[in-house]
Length: 139
View 1 (cartoon, rainbow, N blue to C red):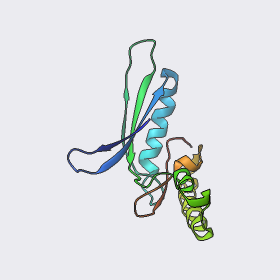
View 2: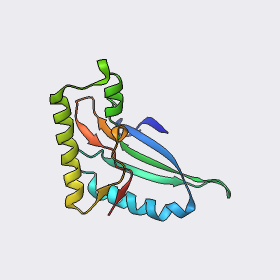
View 3: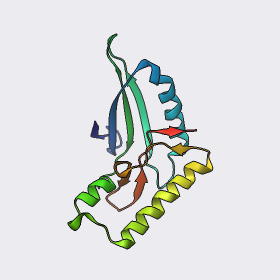
C-alpha cells in the first residue's frame, strides 16, 4: 500500500509505502535502505527521505514504512491507461525512455542494479519529471 503524507515541519509531500516483511528479510532491507540513502540523490531517482520497521507481535510480519519523494502525476502505467487509445506519442516514449536510462546509468555507475523495472515503478512528477521508484536494489 502507498499513502500520501506530509512532513509536519516542512509541509513537503511524501509517498509512504507500507510493506509486510519477515524477520528473515530485515537484514536485506537494511542494506537496500543504505543504498537508497547513498544513490537516490539523482534527478531521475525518487528521493529517499526515511524508513522504519514497525515491529509486530510474534507470529505476524513486521511492516516496513518507506518514505520517498511524492510523484503526483502517478506512474507510466497510469499514464498509458489514461491516454486515449492506451498509446503514447513517439516523442513522449523517447523522453521517458531517455530519463529512465539516465537513472539506470546513475545506479550502474555505482555498481547497483534495479531489480524491479516496470511501468508502476516509473513515476512522473506534476512537472513531467521522470523518476525511478527504487525500493528493490542490489549491489
